[in-house]
Image 1 (tube, helix red, strand yellow):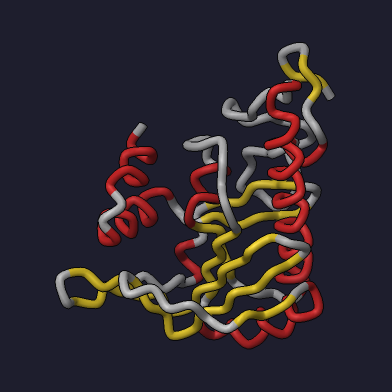
Image 2 (cartoon, rainbow, N blue to C red):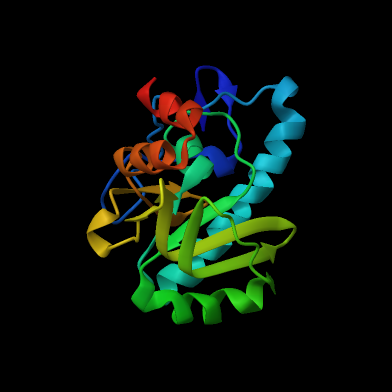
Amino acid sequence: METGGSSLPPVFLRGCSKGGSPPGGTFCRWAKRWTDKEETDGTEREHKLAVLGEIARALNGGDVVWAVGGSLLLYCKGKTDTFRDIDIMVWEEHVETLKALLLPLGILAPPAPNPGYKARHFLNFTIRGVEVNVMGGMFIVKDGKDYDCSLSPSQVAEYIWINGERIPLQSLEDWRRYYLLMGREEKAAMIDC
């Protein structure tokens, strides 16, 4: 398929639909053009998105309530061109199911606590060389107070398609609030742009 005279790799064929099937080649207005300059970054990004597709296939097949958050959410919504890892929020009731589904895909590392936030369930996987952080029952600590940032099924804001897999996204509004609570104003500002 072509867009603007430049071919995009299959991993970037993302639909804008909230529905249950891919929108047949519809490109979001923010789909990035594939250029020679982006080849190295694009290859790494393509690999991470392929891993996300594998994760989605496993979790969707297990009826897990989950959603992408963090910098990958910002990438999926066209707010940034890069993301370092895959951040997944999971409904607490599905943490053990998620863990069982992801263990065959990668290695589970011991959690590395962050004093700025905590989660009742924090899983850190490495899947085909990609860091995957999973949080269930997340709280952000600010000024000695815990703010509940747990994923609930109603917080899955929309779906996109990557590599033929349906990817649930949390809302940018939720993540703007989370970033402000974390003191990461630069990330919140990216959402406002």
